Amino acid sequence: MGGTPKREACFDLIMVDMPDGLYVPGVRVAHPKVPSWNILTGDWAEPIFEVARSHLQDDGATFLFHPDILDVRETTDSYAEAYGFKCLHDW
Image 1 (cartoon, one colour):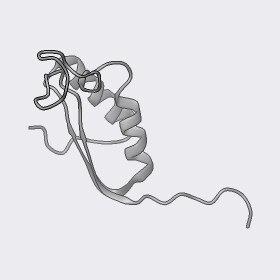
Image 2 (cartoon, one colour; image 1 turned 120 degrees about the horizontal axis):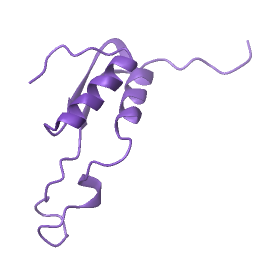
Image 3 (tube, helix red, strand yellow; image 1 turned 60 degrees about the vertical axis):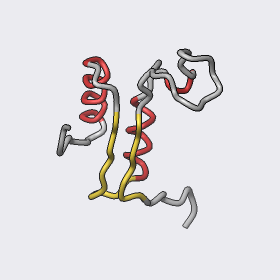
Image 4 (cartoon, one colour; image 1 turned 90 degrees about the vertical axis):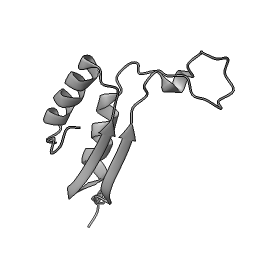
């Protein structure tokens, strides 16, 4: 009984809110400057789906809130398919 222990899934629900590039009231940055953490850049999708695949129960769900931008939607759909997820409801 050696080797690496198998990691078990541990979440029933994962919620992700994608940056939307808007000014955030109450954050100490000059208006209308957008905080760097609220700007959608780079390879944002893969880490989300990697974590979900690694830690979500088989019958679990992921809520992914993202800006309604065609490129973001296409990237989300592409990674969801690649990682074996399916969209049950699109608002």
